[in-house]
Amino acid sequence: MKTAYEVYLHTVEDAGSESFLDLGEFPPLDPDAEDDEFGRLLGMAKDPLAALIAAEQCSGAERAWWVDENVVQDEYGDFVRAGRPPRASPDGHPWPAGEPHRVRRG
Image 1 (cartoon, rainbow, N blue to C red):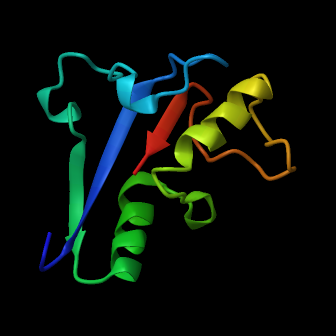
Image 2: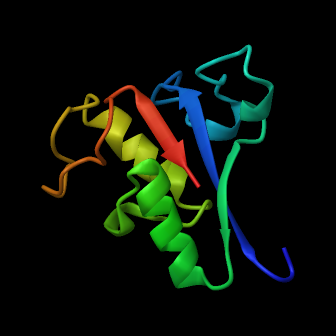
């Protein structure tokens, strides 16, 4: 928005494979939830740092795991190729908190 940053939570089913990494095409975790089609609005903020803080407080997001939407498919691909490990990425960093079969995009 022109006057504020909006923070949305997008939750989708982990429906990917090494040949299908398009997170935008994954089905929602709850197909009956109408607000999940675009995502659930968690909050609004006046500046980027306040938006990151709101995302952390409202969703458990971890700032170290934020990526540009143009990079998220590459990150997800690494996760899939690593066999969807529950604890660490190929570079040794822990995967984001939460269930191993959820993909968060923001």
